[in-house]
Image (cartoon, rainbow, N blue to C red; front, side, top):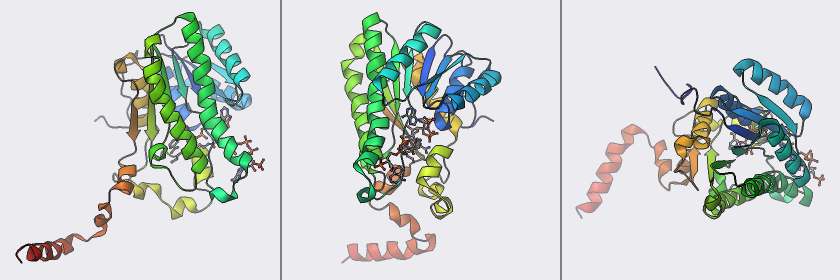
Length: 294
Ligand code: HXC
Ligand code: NAP
């Protein structure tokens, strides 16, 4: 029987497309890039560490039979980003999709952060997304290429905010504003902009920095999710593949949350009544009804 851990789209859903995945050598970026290859796309994976990317490139090509280009590119540096655009176009002729997935994050009380620590996260997440978006956007406009897609990875605290990850929350909120703004402004050039807000999807990069040591056991993130589990990489890859494919051609300026209901559980005022034992509800109902009859 089919379920969320299965591959959703038809095999040729991304055939002929070239997709750049920043931070594509690890975690969620790697999972999404692998699925895009399986659906027929050419993929460019980028990050700061070329040796790591080359290993992943070989692994991906062997697994999928697809074509992968690995490019070292620190998204904080506009010149490196422009060189990455050129390397991608030189290799594949054109690029159809930019997936802004690279990020930096760690937990810290904000007063412990140096100005440089705060800047580092803003620079990777907000400035990095801006750099890649601007470089590809200008390229596509200049070349009059249309039917382009930018997909940004944010988080649900882009709109709720979150203590202890303030630089990340600030930066992701900016990325979301950029997504919605450009969805309108650059639609006339044939570009679509959307975002995904994932809930907890276990990756080494995030877990080592957000749940170091025994915090993993102390704060079981699955318990915060109404569906009582963390995300499976394939279900995120399924959503991303849909959003970068032509099947989502009329979806523009949207942020899609995939978190099992996690952020709403934290938000709803009376959601804490989940802790009321089943057998108490008869008594509570009787107390409430008794008030009404007076
Ligand atoms: C306080 C810290 C710190 C910490 C670094 N700094 N770690 N301050 N607490 N734990 C400070 C440093 O002292 C320095 O400031 C500044 O931050 C920059 O640090 P560098 O190590 O020089 O930076 P860099 O080598 O560029 O590394 C960036 C990084 C690192 C963000 C610090 O963790 C990294 O490379 N991350 C990439 C991958 C990643 O973060 N993945 C997780 C994404 S998860 P000073 O003042 O000393 O110079 C995610 C999930 C969201 O986004 C939601 C999940 C549910
Ligand atoms: P990850 O594996 O650490 O991914 C981050 C990637 O970004 C790495 O490949 C890293 O590669 C790259 N990167 C970092 N700094 C960079 C820079 N300056 N230039 C270029 N690349 C850089 O973590 P992940 O969990 O898969 O995160 C992927 C995305 O999902 C992020 O946008 C994150 O905010 C988002 N997200 C994750 C979760 C979750 O539960 N995992 C939840 C919500 C949102 P190098 O270090 O080799 O450069």
